Structures are given as C-alpha cells and as structure tokens.
Image (cartoon, rainbow, N blue to C red; front, side):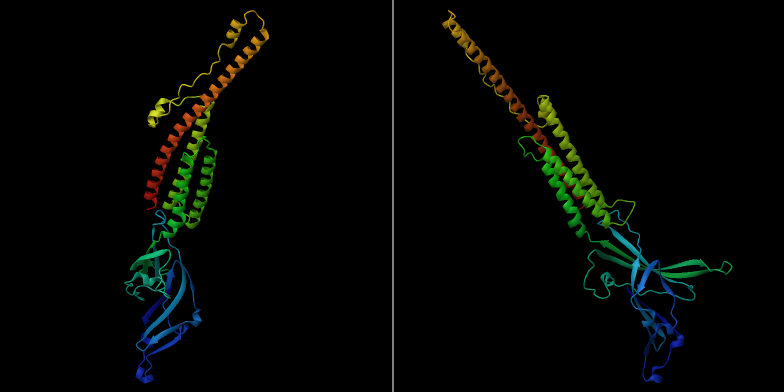
Length: 371
C-alpha cells in the first residue's frame, strides 16, 4: 500500500524570493517532525528503510511524506456464503500519543473509482479473486483516560478505512463445484442405469465406493482453501450433500443386490403390488409343452405278452424313467430362467425410476446451493 501524510509546520516556512525561487525541498525524514500516526492491528513491512525516505517541504510549511508498505491485514472472515461471500476489512490510522486537540487527523475523499485502490503500480488489471465494491472513510472520536493524569479524560480521533470486497466465484465453481456435480451425476447414472441383462451389481457398488473417495478428496481441497471457522461454508455443504447422495445410492444398490439374491435363492415371485406401483406389466409365462414319453412298456407288454423279451422290456423301462428325469430337469431350468427374467425386468424398472428421481433431486439441489 502506498499512502501519504501531509501537515503544515509553521516553523518550516520561507520566502522563495530569498532563496533563488526555490519553493520546495526534499530532506531525510528523520530531520523533520513527523506525527506518530500508526496503522492499528496491522503487521507492516516498509518497502524502503527509514533512512532512505525523503520528506517534501513546501515554502508555505506544508510537509508531505509517502510511505509505500507491504501490509498484512487481519480481517474477520465470514465464510458462510463462500464462494459468494462479501468481506469487509478495516484499516485504522491512530495518533499514538496525541489527542484531538493536539493533532487533527483528516482523510482525503475516497476515490470515485473503487478499482483505483487495488494496485498502485498497474491499475489496468483487476484482482483475479476479489472485486472491490466500496471504499469508505470514517472519523471516529473516542474518549480516553490519560495515564498518570489523575483520571483526566480527553478526546482522541482516528481514521477508519473500510474496504468491502466480493469474491469472484468462477474459479471455485469450475474447479470444485462443477467436477463434484459431474462425478455425482455419473455415479448415479452408473449405479442405476439398467444396462445389465444378468442383474450383476457388484461393479455398481465398486463405482459408488470409488466416487465416495473422489468426493472426499474434493472436500479436503475445499477445507484447505478456506480459513478455519466454526461454521461450514456454502460450498462445503454442497460437497457434503453430494457425498450423501453418492452414499445413499450405493446403499440402495447394495440393498437391491441383496433383495435380488434372496428372491432368486428363495424362488420368490415378483409381488403384484410392486408391479402395480411401478406400472410395470411383466410378461406372463406361457404354458410350456410337457414332454411325455409314450407308454412304451405297455406297448411292448401287449406285443410280447408271452414274456419272450423281458430284457428288452426292462431296458425300455429304464429309458422311460431317464427321459422323465430329463424333462423334469429342463422344466426346472426353464422355471429358474423365467424367474430371473421376471426379477430383472422388475428391478430394471426400479433402477430407471430411481435414476430419474435422484438425478432430478441432484440438479435441483445443485441449483439451490451453487447457482
């Protein structure tokens, strides 16, 4: 920051005509009286040492000094609305040992263009993170008790410069909020998209766990970007909400996977009320043809009633029993395949419904918290 002080010293006046028309001079600062106006509650580091700075003295007694310094200003941050937050910082100039009657501190009018206070070297560029909104100056008069004066109360004056800034949220939206939204949307899409005809959901659970890890990393980045505070910022709430959405979708995927496995192992039929709730009309099983072998043994018995081919009759009886066992096994496989198809069709309808509901909820929540 580059700030200057100007005051009038009646002991430093001269007539320029007596000194060859010289109307101002430059002398080291330590050779003139300088008011002890301090920057309050600020850690400052001068850019030039005191023995290198000069004071400009005019012939009418006006003394001006300019002190470029690098300031470290401690502002009380309000991060509840981050990254759409506005911050106010106050710089106080306080006469340390003088009262109002001894030193009257006045401030120049603030600049009309607030952007002029940004950079004293290059005013053409804007700050990449902050946008300056207002710059105000206040003169504060307070009553103080002088030490070792028997309780004498005097007036003291100090100047307060209040700078109000608003954060530019573009960086945080593009780097943190938008990737979080995309990752969560892809997680929901990958978990609930009915792309598997076999009902396998193990990869979906792995996708949900990987997404939880990615969002946890983003939440750690948000915490590193923010000052420590007892209140969670707006962006932090959003990342936690997206983390909750991914966690909820993963839990639902595990529950559906468990229900699917139990239904197939217990040979449960899809409940009719669930079909009506989802408006899902399942294809009914057609009557499968039952393969039955002709009465070979009876035919042989009628033809060979004299008992001449007993061995042949026994062989055909074994063949008939084996054929019935094969037919029973084929019918069992067809029943299991039908049950798997019915549950896959029902769970695909559930996945599609959850995909639409969760994605709409995610979009509305993101628009409410971020936009």
